[in-house]
Image 1: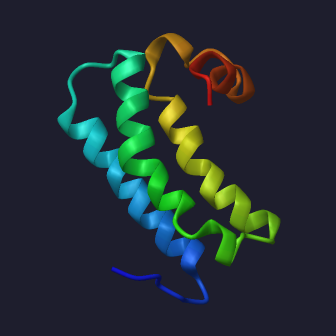
Image 2 (image 1 turned 135 degrees about the vertical axis):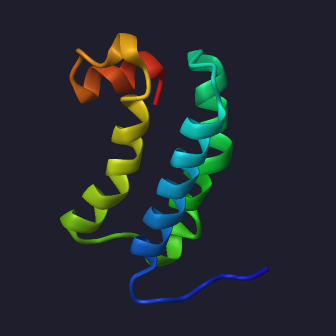
Length: 94
């Protein structure tokens, strides 16, 4: 175990987190918010937060890239699809 240092660490984090979201979507049949939130927080989100103090995304484009993962996750819930992104975050407690 160790810390990976790379120029494009945010891209690597995004890719891993995106793959984890795909895994969750393909393998979990239940869309109950409690279950999905626990899976997201334990499987996908750690990839985004991995050593974030060291690489802290500075540019807006880098922050938006990482925010896309959470945005994609909030669209997993059919009953929240009609709401805007900030309202979905509020309802899910993110």
